[in-house]
Image (tube, rainbow, N blue to C red; front, side, top):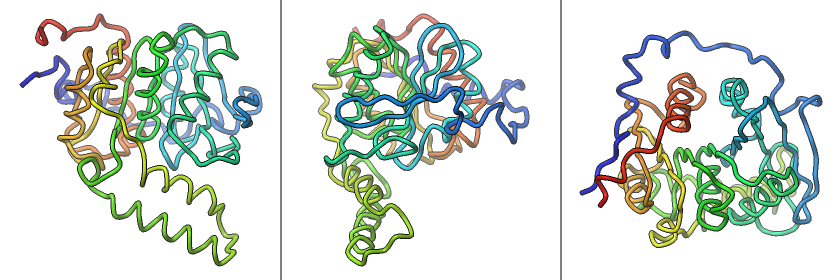
Length: 282
């Protein structure tokens, strides 16, 4: 059994008093709705919305299935002091268009690749949470030259009960969206809801061999109270050649908002320190 140099790194940070200070109740800027930082661009036939903050080495933030740029406010607020942060509303979320096709993880990876080309960014760091972590892994597989390091929190590589504790709830949400669409209900954008949950119901399908193609260091992050099963996160970690593992104790799938100081400091340390871990995999 292979182990990682950052296994249970969260335990170490829990003892650091600077990380347990009270979190801010308001952010510096209206992230996700900031005209001064917002941009729209049409790529792959879809108008995408993104915001940029800070200067320095590029860092892309990718939100989860039901999120948007605003959900990543704690990460923007922290990392913009050191990096050029590019926060993207993925297809169908926030201010980005859904497009005429079915929502897929691969289409979102293609969107990000096109956005990096549009911004003349040849390579970047990526932080992805949940579905955003799936997109980040796909970037590492299909566009390895574009990715320096990845922090992938709460990712899954298969759409089933081997990966997710709450798979039945995904089916229930999709069926409810189907019902609301059939009834002509207008209380929500049920088309987007349907597409979001259909994506989780049938995707992704990333093999261990594909994960093995990722060339950059990857920090696989999860919690011991996550929606993703612990053994599934271990599978992802073990399949990536240059991976480290972090399990936050007593935390949930919402740690990026509930304890951003711990999450952000852990990721920043990983991005700034030399990669460690290959020696135990030889």
